Length: 244
Ligand code: GLC
Ligand code: MG
View 1 (cartoon, rainbow, N blue to C red):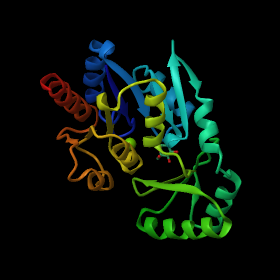
View 2 (cartoon, helix red, strand yellow):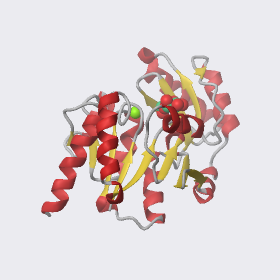
View 3 (cartoon, protein in one colour):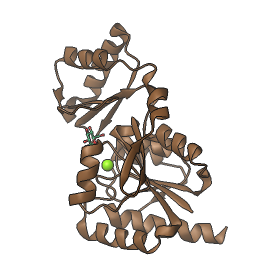
């Protein structure tokens, strides 16, 4: 059985025909895949994906940029409290929010997530804003990780957490081998997935931040975009698994 840990936006979603083909392939081979979505979306946005955007039901989900893990049975999402306990140790949401406000250049996304605070930023100022926020964190003694994706989304999550660490935790807990895990993504908030696993699909429309991180490593760089790109990569790996 293959564990597929895939980002949603810009990876599985983004091209409706590609989504249709990918879903068809996964449904046909459903018994061969343990499907995990790994996304910056929260649980409400995850459900919207399932009920109005055409995503198929996964077996587990890593939400809010790795800060929430759910296992899924009969369509019911159950949060993993062990993961919550692991990442909550150094987390101070209020201090993280205050530090962000002090920079004066972030617009809140207005979401309410337990272990993630997210903002919109001006893409041309992304590096400068990251440095400013890091200084505030130092001053305020905040231990947290900053992830900027697409230039404009800035997520703050606990320091010992990201999509990759959540993926490692999940497969270990479920006794799934890392050798048969394939990750897939398109942007900077997926970089950690590619750090944690050695097989992965970078879709053709991926951002330079992920391309650079994946460079010179043995990942599959798809030519096709979004769902078609994931499909291209899955077919490549399935053939490779058969020949080893
Ligand atoms: C999704 C989330 C948003 C986050 C972004 C990047 O769009 O809804 O909160 O900032 O992913 O991780
Ligand atoms: Mg994405």
